[in-house]
Every structure is written in C-alpha cells, then in structure tokens.
Length: 146
View 1 (spheres, rainbow, N blue to C red):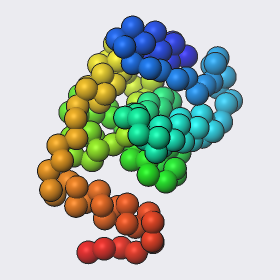
View 2 (view 1 turned 90 degrees about the vertical axis):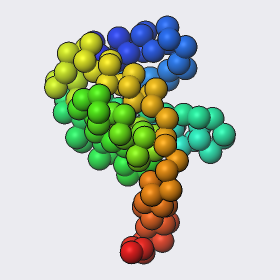
View 3 (view 1 turned 60 degrees about the vertical axis):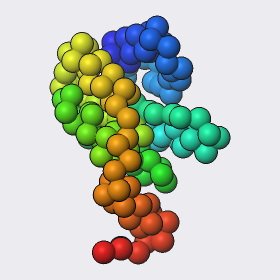
View 4 (view 1 turned 120 degrees about the vertical axis):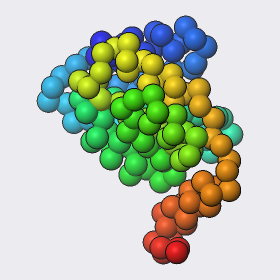
C-alpha cells in the first residue's frame, strides 16, 4: 500500500487525475483480480467517452495483475520492469494499462517506471498499428489473421 498511496499523491501533484480502485488497505489475502479488472474497465469506459486514459495495476510481481487487466476487452496491459519496457509498451504496443510489481522495485524505481509509461506516446508506426489491429480483430472475432 505504500507504493499505491505514494503514487496517488505523487501523480496527483503532477497534474494527473488519479482514481484509486483499491484496495484501500493492504491485506495479503485480498484477491487482486477484482481491483485490476475494475481499473481496466474504468480505462476502457474513459476511452469510450473520448478521454485519453491510462491505467496502473500494482501487485507483488505484476504478473497476475497484468493477466487480470488483459481480460477486459480492449485493454492492452503490459508488465513493465524497467524504463525500456515501460516506454516500449506505449511506443510499440499502445498499451493502455501498465502492471508493476511492488515487491520487485523500490518506491522510487516503480515511480520512475510508471512515469516513463505515462509520458511515452504511441509511435503510430504502420507496423505497430497493423499488429495491434490484428490483436483487436482476434479479440472481436476469434479469428487469427496472418
């Protein structure tokens, strides 16, 4: 919870509109999928309303959190473990949710990773647009496009 509380305060101070989808306090027995799915649903609702929204899901490793968020239609959640993977998630994959493992990084490291993700624009390179379109088509139809 230290990381989550820090990020809410830090990112709000930088001008980001932050909505915390929980949990409000740490409980090792919490089932994280509901928090991650709710965060991902909020990103998609905001995007559907025309708002440029990105999401952050936090956990011990970030792996399960990424998997849960990716179950929401339209979400492209990426596990970022350094500055490069955070930037590439946005630049190449137009990821709209970042997953970070709180037990894998110090608060300062995690903050840097998340800031890099939030700051990086999508490149709009044709090859990346084409690949993302193929993923979206599969999500809509179940058909794999070669």
